[in-house]
Figure 1 (cartoon, chains in turn brown, orange):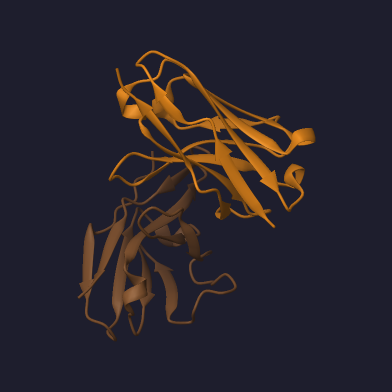
Figure 2: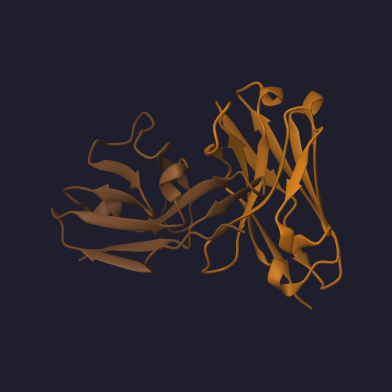
Length: 108
Length: 119
């Protein structure tokens, strides 16, 4: 089955930029979606189809996808961005959804 | 209000069964594929199963080995997950989620219901 890997953690100072990677074999050929999950809460979609933002998601959050890596970028990081972030793809070979392993973003 | 509300979680002994429900409101339930996602304590998200708009197609994560069954009742705007032969590793928060129309992501999530499998 398709495997998607993320770094376990990313630390960033307020006002700086956080970049979260999501790796998979030729993931650039797939649509990648990103969710933010704060403690005790359900996940929230923050980026879909590589780089599109749902309404209400700030422009500081953006996505890209090419080759074997997709990236979620959070610019001008704020304390409220501290959360777990998961990437997700659809694996057409298995007709299964696949989540990345998740990345905890810590704001220093 | 557009929302999903899960229910039915609780404590169950290993080998036991449990049925989860998800009540949908504020949107036309029958137009959407629906999914169950689970999250073990302190762990990541795991897709469990999904079901087509009319219930005619169902897909499951391979590791379940036939123990779980997803179903829906469009007349009642309800999604269900029947879980049998439960194991300790099934302990998790189970989320109901809506798949966007014609897309491959989840645009609406419930708050989840906790299932604990323990003796």
